[in-house]
Amino acid sequence: VDFRSCKWSLPKKRVQNIQRSLDTLRNSAVVGSTVCAKSVASLLGKLWSIHVVAHTAVSILTRSMTDAIAKMLNRPDLVAEKDPDRLRWLLRQVWGGDVVWTREANEELMFWTEVEFDKLESPFSYDVGQQFVKKWITSPLGYVSDTVRVFAVDSSDTGSGGGEFMRDGDLWRLDPRTGFFLRLPDTSTGESSTLRELRGAAAMVLTIPPDCKRIVLLLDSQVAVRVLQVGSKIPALQRMASEIYLFLLKRGCVFIPCWRRRDTRILRCCDARSRFMDSHAFFVSAAVFWRCNVIARRIWGRGFQFDRA
Image (cartoon, rainbow, N blue to C red; front, top):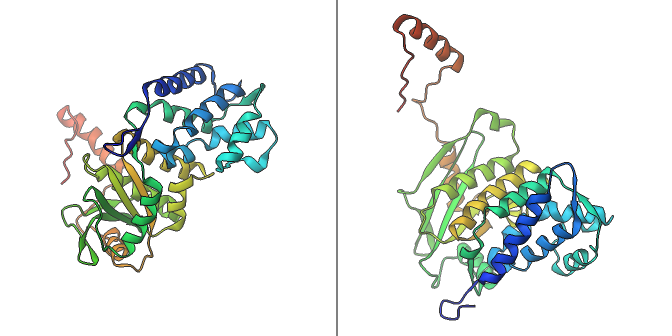
């Protein structure tokens, strides 16, 4: 506890205990086989004990491991449980036995092995600040630290667009230096709108400068925001949330996803960017290129050099 900076962080002993639990489980867990339930419960307990510095990431990225224990105890009502008191009860029931180790649980384990726990930190007032920020986004009046930066993104059928938004009196305006457009693959047309929104969110997060540690991300999809808050049982959505939080945890960022109506000024601007059409983006089938490459090698002894601006 650092009262000078008003931040939480993890003591060295706690970090070492978590690392030992991770190593123990990683050395014994094999997808498709069984693993000691007590090892899983021990790791879950330690991860939930540090939620003050990992917040939503703990809630999202322990779902499958928790599900494995709930199923072993035949308590389907506790699958994906998020109430700390009920979770504490669940973990205390584990005295012995084994759980089936799933691919999803293993992906969560691998996620936590990549986290640098000694670098995690969080402000004391995170929960209160989160509610205040949501109100501030609606009406950006009053003082908020300049270290809090607001980004927004929206996805259409063909692309994602967004950028960083700055206060302009009591309104928001897009910083033109940060505006971006990402063309989504043609296969995304048949994907769910939630998955497209999360793809756009991931792309937006990757463009955020490294010195930015307090991030507010606005989306017009309530479902996508919910996935970023508590995770999802749908593997593709859960995977996108995992990738976003792994990136942010490595950066040591405080991350607050917020929902805004699509008819607000910010989201209208992002929606327009997401529908950008590049009239000079000409494409040739890959099969045509490789056929020409074979001919080029036969004639000149070397393949094409292909440049695209």
